Image (cartoon, rainbow, N blue to C red; front, side, top):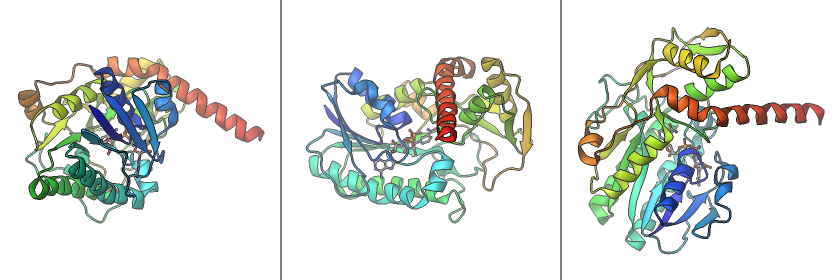
Length: 321
Ligand SMILES: NC(=O)c1ccc[n+]([C@@H]2O[C@H](COP(=O)([O-])OP(=O)(O)OC[C@H]3O[C@@H](n4cnc5c(N)ncnc54)[C@H](O)[C@@H]3O)[C@@H](O)[C@H]2O)c1
């Protein structure tokens, strides 16, 4: 197949490109590099089945006939979507519409990368796909949450009104090599701080929980969904739940760091609990994650070490310059 991956120069998108190429497909990666990096796809430079298109998908575009569109373009980390709030709303709405129009034109299948943020600060725990969520529509996180909720509604509408063959994956917190070091999420914050010898910042009392999915597990789930006939949203994430304090301890253990913990107030609308119910994915796709947190952190260690070194070198360079 010729497959379009939007946001393919980002963290998860680049791993999806790798997986598709690994299965023998041809990949067109459309990315405007807002939050992605060419380094993430540098290893594909000489791959004849890989094409990079510098493109803002919120603007109309056409890269020729494709059989599948995997729509991953969107700022994803809180730091990024707070900085690029309007762009986040644009890519969730206009970007998704452009991609769905594209799918309609070429009779291509379409998969939307949605998010657990659709559940907001949930009253139901763990979250099943049938839960409608509890999102603050006007809070600081709404630029992301509502953009994705709109993108899901749009995806379902193109299915209902235009018969586009669609899928929706609700991705839960994912980490691994190529994750941005400054993305403001728990794992990257803790790894950066531990490897730089800084205190680890814990918001609130650290009893709030998160679940973390290693990127190879996440991508395996996404690929399984892409090949399935399921059109309702499917949670893909790791249901093992850790408190923030447990996560901090795991990071200290894996990095061997002597950093201490520093407590700060909880940010607005920070979810207290977030954990996927993956029974649907287990049942329909025969998929479940296999990488535990400590192994995943271990496999990510080299990436975080070199990212920390690169940041330190950049700081030194700008101080010298
Ligand atoms: N990483 C996670 O834990 C997580 C969790 C839930 C959902 N997701 C979803 O997965 C997708 C990928 O997330 P990620 O963590 O890889 O983020 P990322 O920021 O690393 O990647 C997003 C990519 O989209 C590109 N992009 C943004 N706006 C664009 C536009 N208008 N046109 C073209 N390209 C654009 C960026 O440059 C970047 O390469 C996102 O849609 C995100 O919402 C990620």
